[in-house]
Each structure stands twice: as C-alpha cells, then as structure tokens.
Picture 1 (tube, rainbow, N blue to C red):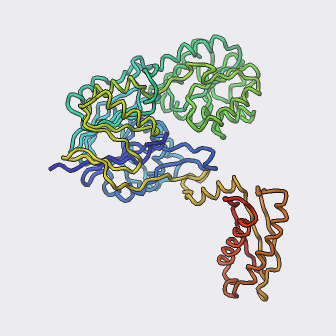
Picture 2 (picture 1 turned 60 degrees about the vertical axis):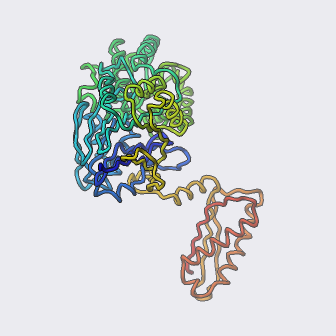
Picture 3 (picture 1 turned 45 degrees about the horizontal axis):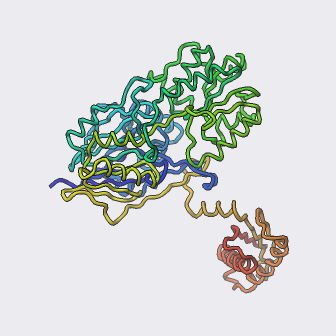
Length: 558
C-alpha cells in the first residue's frame, strides 16, 4: 500500500502574493515557493508580510527542500525569513532565480550559509520520496519552471506562474511537448495558475510591447524614463534594444533594478552592447534627448527612485517639463492610490506620463487567459484539479472552466484555502476536515526580522483612526494620593467639548487612585491597568463611539 500524499497551501490562495505550498508523504515534505504579500496602507508601516511558518517548524524534521518556480517576490520574497528560522533547508531554483535569492539573503545576517542548488529545465532532483523535474514555461521574467513531481500516489504537475508565449523574446517557447508527454503518462493532480482565469482569450506575447516602445522612442524629443518590475528582464531588453536603435544611452536607476539586471547580464540573459550603459552619476554629462533611463518604482513605493524623482528629491535623476515617463507594468491591486499620487507629481513637473488606458499595449500580462488554461487542461488531462494563485473569484472560475473542458474525465476538482489539507490515497482525493495553522507574519519597517503581532497592528490602526490619550499620573509615595494629573492627547477629536471632557477625566483618575489599596499603588502595572479601565468606561459614557482611542497611562512616583 503506497503512502498517502497531502497537498497543503500555506499561502497564496484567495490572495495575490505570499505563495507557498507544502507537499507531504510519509516522513518527507517539500515546499514550493515562499513569497511575500505586498502590504497596503491599512498595514501602517509594515515592511513585508510572509507566511506563518508554524506548521513548517512543527514538521521541520520532515523538510527535504524548498523548490522555487521563478524569481518574482511573491514567490521568493519570504526565503530569507524562512532561513532565519530553518537555516539548513536546501533550496533549488534556476540560475537567475537563485541569483535574486542570493541578493536578498545578502541583506540579512544568517548564522549558516544557505544551501542553494541550481536546476534547469529538464533536470531532475530527488528529495526524499519525491522526484521533481523542472519544465520550461514562459512568463514575465526569465528562467521560469513548472514542476512535475513524482509521488507515491502518482504524478503532480504544478504550473508555477506562466503564460503561453509563442514568440518569446529569448526564443525559448513554452514546452508543449513535455506537458503533452505528462498527459500521456497520466497526471494525478494538476495545480494551475489562476491569475487571469476571468480574462477571455489569450494573453499577448511579450513582443507585442515592441511597437508601442518604437512609437514612444520616435516621438520623444527630451529625456525618456521607463519604469517596470525589476525582474522584468525581457521588458528591460526591449527598452535597451530600442535605445540602441535610436542612439540613446541607458541608465539603470534603483538598487533592485540594478541588481536584477547585473545578475541577468552575468548569466547572458540580458544583453547590453558596450558603450550603451551609463552610470546614473554621469547622466548630466549627456544631452536630455540622448538619454533613456529605466527607473525602479512602478508601484509607487514611497522610498523608490521614481517616487523621489517625481517630487524632485533624487540626487541623480531630474524629471523636467517635456520629458516622457512610461509605466510599463501592471498596477498591483491595492497600489493604485500610491501609483496615481506619483503620476500626479510627475504631471506637476510637466512630464508626459504614459500608463494603463492612456497608452494601451505598454504592458502585457505574464499570466494565462482562459483559452490558454483550456489548452493546458487538454494537454495534461489530469484526474484531479486544484486552481492556485489567485483570489477566490479567479479560483472559482478556473475550477468551473476545468469541469467544462474535461467533463466526466475529471474525477474531481477542489477550491482550497490556505491551511486546507487535500489528501490523495488509494481511495481517491478528498479535503480533510482539520486544517493546519496558517496566517500572516508581519515584518516591521526597517527591522526586517522583527515580528509585529496582531495586537500591535490593531493599536496602529486605532492610533490612525482615533488618536491616542496619555494620562500621566504622579502618586505621592507617603499619602498615596494623585498629586499631579496631566492628560496628553494626539489626534483625538470628538466635538468642541473635547477639552472639557478630558479635563473631567482628571476627577475619575483621582478617584481611581484614592480608592486603591496601598498594595495596589505599589504595583505600577496594576495601577496603569486600573486607570486605563476607568478612563475607557468614562469615555464610553461621554461619547457615542463604539471604538475608542489608544489609552496609554503612565504612573510616576513622586
């Protein structure tokens, strides 16, 4: 009797980002990807959101390795945080993907050097009872893999992120032949990218951006600026090719962009002719009409190079009246407000800004649309199907599409949530009733590894919405009376009578101190908690608010 196999999503289902999947059988477990979720304004200063690793840590003796499908941050951004807790996990990925991982890891202090092993499409690795083969797929970055995983129950096929680009810039087409070969052999379970499951037709080829870039270069009379994702190496190549054709020098501005491009150049993925690349510090030595600057910050990140340049605060880049700034990247849901603020600043500087509907075709998706998903389902012909990588509406539409395409040949399909356990055994496939612990691990800005718990995030939200009140109480050691009470507040406004109301709270605090025993008064923490409780009850009586400001009592001995 073969060991059962369990599929456990730990992130990335029902959300965009933080992709992470565990595959288990017997005493062996592998992980596929460990990404970040990009924080939004409601996260109040959070730098990164990574998967809660409680379950992985509980099973660490079974962990045989982490396999990465490609180099986007929503798939590799959590790797350093994993290594901080499990420093001996072997990591596998393509040369470009691991190059990006090495750069990330270099910014962390790890006690043990990580074990990074390069794999290429067509190569197999053995991790415990699993044999994993990488399969080349096209996407919006370089060297991307689908994973064919041989397990005790049969073959699993994980597409990673992909699209079917039949005219890729590097000439390496999607490996239809291998996908069809797996379909002939028999695929037990297909796990497939659902990001564009609600978009009809086919995704456009990366080459479709070329004519739009040609038009921009032809019409530009002054400096040109392009912003895209740092790992979008094929997009960078197209911009560089047009710059060479139009005799413009190219500067790469932004640490993440410069790093990714240097890795790609070292691997021969990105080709920039000698004499084309400028150091950003030399931009001023060349006429504006001879420059094409590729600059990081396509998502309006507050500290990005583009955001600083848009408000005139970048020490090497200046954007002037008549310059063209082209956004060659998708707006990630939740980032629209930040991006449009940057665009507003650019317009104030007199720049012509090209983005979205203003310049259709300046970006193409890296994910498969419905016709491509149908093609994969018919090539692979899986017995079971699980949609991955998307919000619930995309997962639901992808599942419906699979049932429509495969009909009775598809034994079952499942919409999983993070923490669900799908078990494959001799009886078939089913979702187990119990879930494993999952969640979001919030990393504070600037400290990288410092975890912010839910309580702290609630406090930050309360501060942003309702303000803070700090009652400072000095208690006489001899008499036990409150000899001085000062109430400080920031951001707390309920009405014109707020000041009088806070003044009335002094009597409540004085009574709370007077009614306390001498033993209570000696315990500062106890007194602070008591004052906080009395203050909350007072505010509840005086205001109609259901939510209250953050109250932080300070007790001093006088």
